[in-house]
Image (cartoon, rainbow, N blue to C red; front, side):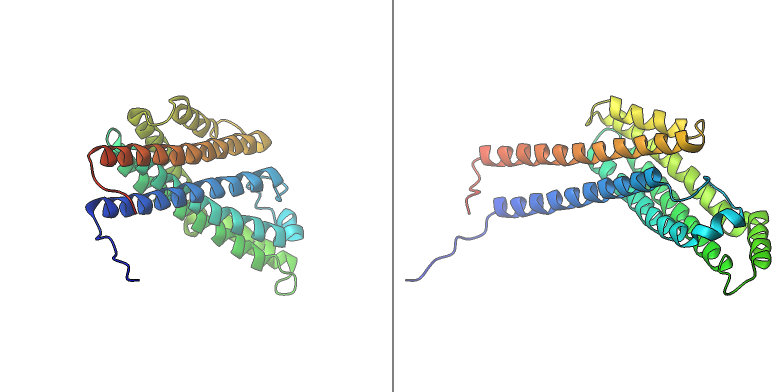
Amino acid sequence: MATIARPATAADGRSVQLGIRGARSILAAATLAVGAAVVAAVLLFRPWPVRNSFVFGEIAPIRDGIWTSIFVDSLAFAAVAIGLALVVSQLTPARGGALANLGAIVVTLGGVLFAMGAFAFAAFAWYVTDPAVLPAADGARLLDYAVANPEHVMIPQALGFLLYTLGTVVLALALVRARTVPRWLPIAVIGLTIAQFIAHDRLLDLVQVATMATLVILAAMAVRFRRSAHGDARAMWEGSGADTRI
């Protein structure tokens, strides 16, 4: 028995577009949530003895753990920056769009630059602390030289962090203007971001963990927002009399 296929309609095309947009939204939110969770886990685990320590004697005994943790953290941090840019862009379809566009550029550039600088130092430190290649005295001298001349690794990393921080604040302001998420969430992001420059040592770790937690919440709200928008659009098309049956 022959089967006659129903001709495709405009509603079918719209449904496909909604499905693609929904999948992209979930992917962006997942990138942000997973990246933020990984960064938080590294901060809680804290494989380094002292934050931002450049002392040869502290790095050499745990060189493998430091390289691994910074590799994971750098990759996750870049994912957070990219995911945050995409998520906020989706949450600001009208109001706050200009701020979101600006913040997306700045936060992505900063996140990637920070990740590059962090991993560059981790790789460099891993090599110079290998006793099979360099005597400890020579490795320590080379590490001290890198610290004394930070323009090729540490300054780009610091600049990346500052750009990421600025971009995060701009994106949070875009969310405040858009009002697509509860206002307390972007305000909390701004407050915790500023608190990073006040807290020190273990307290700084915990502040940054809390910041990552707010980004996980933001990712979940972004998925909810997209599903709500998808349902509203679908109801509008069905209410217009278009045949959306498969």
